[in-house]
View: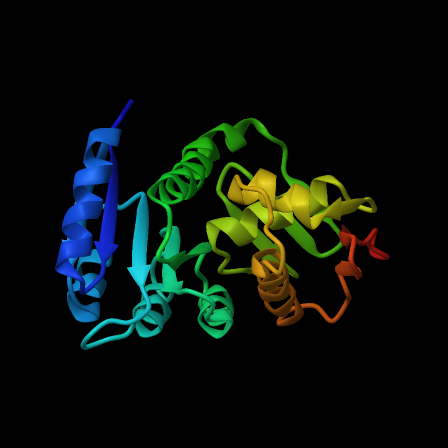
Amino acid sequence: MTEKHLLLIDDDTEFTELLTQYLEPQGYIIDVANDGEEGLNKATSSNHYDLILLDVMLPKLDGFEVLKRLRTSHLTPVLMLTAKGDDYDKILGLEMGADDYLAKPFNHRELSARIKALVRRMAMLPSNSAQQNLKMGDVELSPSTQQVRCTGELLELTGTEFSVLQLLMINQGKLVSKQDISEKVLGRKLAAFDRSIDMHVSNLRKKLANYSPEEKIKTLRGAGYQYLVSSCH
């Protein structure tokens, strides 16, 4: 297995040392940054990272500012590390383009599972190239290039948003449950009160609405989502 390169941005040096010792034997190369400024510089450097672990509370630049600036140029998967029970941080992180979140203190096995799921999803993207393009109304999704266009305009989607949209489009007209989306896209079961799928769909809706007024993703309350059969032919 090729070693995966992770960037850990956290100001707790004892925590970063323990986490590095835990993850390195699992086949990960770990780079560490102890403040937001250093983290952003490393994240946007020539190094290719398979995943960024990003703490919210950081000196110089907080985690949200790092994520905001990172997303202007990079779509590297980001796992936000938030305070236990702070739903505001979780929702804001997802709104700003984080792929998933985990509340501190967390079980190391849970962290390992989240990392594996996100890295595996990214590793599977090349296999998308064999899949056919999806074109529905004014939306066109290309698995081979990982690009989505709406009315001909390129959408800046994170890898998670792309995967959610692809799953919904493949199942056009059918109900796709939040549980299904979570398992197939995030690689984990959806916990009670987990808003992550809602936020990814909300981000998708906003980005699509920038170019097309037509509703494309319908919420079936308590059940899941449905990609609507387009009225355009």
